[in-house]
Length: 263
Image 1 (cartoon, helix red, strand yellow):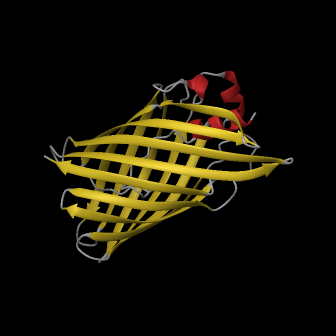
Image 2 (image 1 turned 45 degrees about the horizontal axis):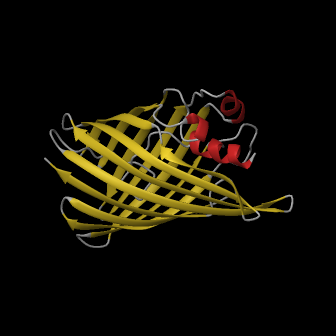
């Protein structure tokens, strides 16, 4: 049963989302016409709990690549592909251990409103998920899914704030996944970036989304803190720590990433 619950968590969180890592909240920035960005990220999370006298330890790992291309000054197309691994131990006995490619995502980010004078902008980001992951292993939904997010960014000198509100509709190939998972996933989040120097930014993020399991009243909520260091104008390295604010979110996760931009 615990294997099914872990698969549920991976499936229901498989919605397109590519922000300035380690942030989960996206910004309205685009690459500009002809601009490229390649972002490589990793996340390792761990969780421990007790259930009816059984000690349960969960570990998850994700390595992902996201490629963005500016088809105009205000519109980007983004493709992403994750590699996933998860393991569940019950009283030190492995009850689930699976790994492989997850579902591929395709997104379009359109910054449709921008006021440079007051540093405010809005963007819309629709996206779909393609069933490239193995649904039988809990690495994908087995069906094409889709959703969209509304993104807002506001600059206050060295401080920049981002807000997201999104929706994703999941569909499932396996009957047991459809019975266990919510189809309609809503999320909201708020993030901030503070320019400590020309090269270093301190970032923080907080968010919540619909519970993955049907009938659950505890909606996963998280808090992220981290740093983004610009080695050069077009190459960033980042580090973050993500913590769960309730039992529905993993206790802790370590986030690492690099991003390179070029024309």
